[in-house]
Length: 406
Image (tube, rainbow, N blue to C red; front, side):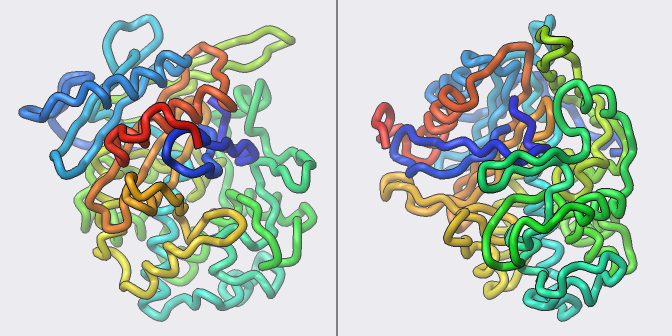
C-alpha cells in the first residue's frame, strides 16, 4: 500500500458510473467489549454476495485483508476477506480496530468548526493571531488550514508542480528504522515552516499534513486542553465511540485487530515487515487516530446528518475547493444519478493500513472499511482504482453500472 504519510500519491478512480476523481492511495487503553468472531456477519443480516465479492477483489489484487461495513435501506451488512495475519487462516475481525490515517482530519475539522460555532475561532481569521509562536504568514486563515490552501510545506514530504521534496522519514528503510520515534507536534510544524512556502496563501491547493497539526494546536490553544481531551469531550463520548482512540505516541492497537505489513526495498531487494506497531506521533492530528468501521459509520452519519455542526457550518464543510474537490476536512465526489448524486468521503492510510469512509449527503447510506497490506507488490495505479470503483458501484449504485467505463 502506498503510504499516505507522504500524501503525494493520489490515484484516479476511472471505472464504472462514478466520475473520475482523485483518491488518496492508501491508544493507550484497551476498550472493553464483546468480540464478535473474526470475519463473522452480523446476526440476521441479509446475504450480500455482491459485497463479499467486491471486498474479495481487494484481496485478489494483493492486499492481506479487508473488512467492510455497509448501512443502507436494507440494514447493516458486515463482512471480511483475506487474513488477519500473514500465515494465519483467520479472517480480519469485523469488529477490529485499525489505523484510520487521514480520516483523522475529518474529526479534527469537526472540532475546529464546533469552536467556530461557539465564537472561539474565526473561520476566516488569520491563524497567526492564535498561534503567534510559529510566526506564520499572516494571510493564512483557519479555513486555509482545513482546506489545504495555506501553502505550508507538508512535513512528511511534498510533491508540487512536478517536484518531489523530501520531508521527515516517512517511507522506505528510513521510516522502518525510525517508526518508533516520538515527534512533538511543534517539532513537526517548525520543520515544515523551515521550508519555503509552496505558494501564496489562498492562491492554490496542495495537501499538507502540517495543516492539521496546526489545526490541532489551534484547538489546544483556544480550549486549554489537549487535542485528545477535546476530541473525547466533543465527539467520542457524546457519540459513544468506544472503539476510537487518539493514541498519542503509543505504538499499539487496542483490542482485536488485523496486522499491517510494509513491503519496501532493502539494499535493492524487496523486504516485508510487520508494521502493526508504529509510533503515530509523526501524524499528530493528521493521521494518528485508531477506530472501527462501526465507529466511523456512527461518526460520519451523525456529521452529515447535522448532529455535530449547525447547518451553515456543515454547508461550509461540504463546499469543495474547485481545484481539488476538498471541502473542510472531507471530500466531495460527484456520481451518476443512479448512484445517488453526490457522495462525501475521506479516505486515509498509514503504512500498513488503509481506511475508507463514504456517505450519501444525508448520512443515511454509508460505507466504512479497513484494508491491510501484506507482502504483495500491488498496482495502485491500475488495480486499486478498479477494485474501489467496483465496491462503490455495488454499494451506492446497486451494481447497476457494473462493468461500464467512465
